[in-house]
Structure formats: structure tokens, C-alpha cells
Length: 269
Image 1 (tube, rainbow, N blue to C red):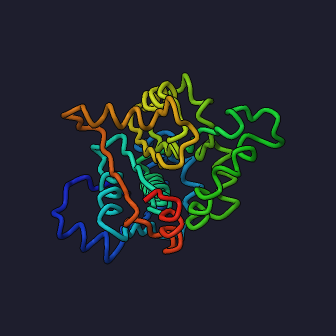
Image 2: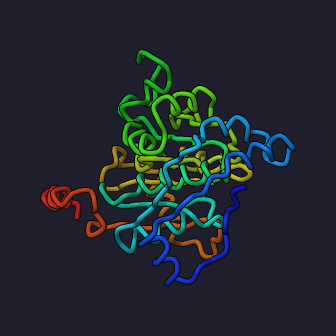
Image 3: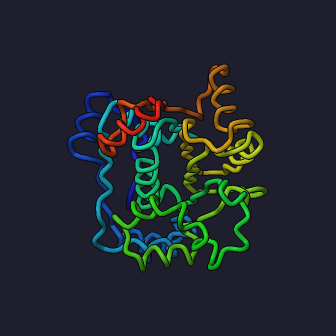
């Protein structure tokens, strides 16, 4: 049976284990099945188990710089319920959050992965687009599914979406909901209003965790920017124990050296 080790490690062991060995998962599927039959696991474990193949690809989360390591450790810290990753494109904000979400799901810390983002370009109105909600959101969630495909087959992902284990939800559809035992990835949140950001952050339920990512330099909202509004409020609030934030800058860009040069040309760095 998988257990989650929440005990703090000293920084030397963190770097040694996380940077050089990666973070590994050992899956005892037969033990999980036996425990499920005895009713000792969460009620959704039988549903989840079918999407955990016998030969799973280990989730190796390997940060490439100090800020990525700081962000990753905060995401993995079960005492931090909401973690913000803010900074320019190519710094690994979304990639690391998706990897942590997959790791938490495989280790049965959470039962679901929720992906949400504002769809500003169509004013949140997806009704006229063809296909299912997931198909309508596909242009905006493709980078996230590229990471999921590294750990699950297309058939497994389709089955997980059908069963509601992976859920794609536009931000406008989140109002009034509360998520339990879920990892919520809120991507591109620089395009939220202040009301939307407050609504999102209050969706967190029992046993849930949230990663909020955004790049203020690429916002489509000059006024009433929800991410900027929260950052300003957060900076003046002391003693927050359940929330954390990592700020990235241009030196943290790992996508490609040309990306950094492009941002320099535009004056974003």
C-alpha cells in the first residue's frame, strides 16, 4: 500500500533525492485491490485502480534551477494547500504543477485532477463551438495533455475523462462548486478578474490542493486583473501558513534560449 511521506527533509537530502534521483513511486496494485475489497481505502479507489496500469512510468520531477526547486517543494508540501507560480513563459510553472498532480493521483493522495482556466478570447462563451466541453477546451489545454500523455495512454486519458477522474472546466463553470480530494490546476490566471480569482480560491474542499499559474506580462486584462490583485493583497498579509508563492523571472526560462531572447526583444525581461 502506498504511503505519503510528509516529513520534512533537510535541504541536502532534498537536493540529493529530488535533483539526482527524481521522485519515484512504487505501486503495489494487488495490495491496493485487497485493501479496497476490505473497504479500508477511500470509496473511489476501485474506480481509480483501473487507470493505474501494472507497469507505470515513474513520475520523475527534476527541477532545473533554484526557483523551480522552490516551487516544486511547495507543491509537494501537503501543508501548503494553494501554491502560486508566477512568472514568464518557459519557466516550468504548468509543467511542474501537472507532474505533481499526476504524482499525487498515482499515490492516491487525491482522486481527481481538475484543469481550469479563463477562456478570455471567446469571453467564456463556449456554447457555439462544436464538440464536447473537453473538445471545446482542447486548444487551451493541449500543453497539459502533452504532459499527461507521458504517463498515460490516450485510451487511459479518455477513460479518466469519461469517469470524471480528469475534468476540464472553464473558469466560468467553477462557480458554486466545491472540490474534495482533488488537485486543481488553475492555469493562465493572469486573465481573471478579481471576483473570478476570489471565486476560484474558495472552491477548495477537504483533501484538495491547488496550483495557480500565471504570467502578468501576458495578460489580456489591463484593468481588474485578478492575479495582480491577489498578489498585492498577499504581499501585505503576514502569517499565511496554508498558501505559498514562487516568483519566476527571465533567468528561470528553461524552454529554449530563443524564448528568453524573444522576451528580451519585447522588453518583458
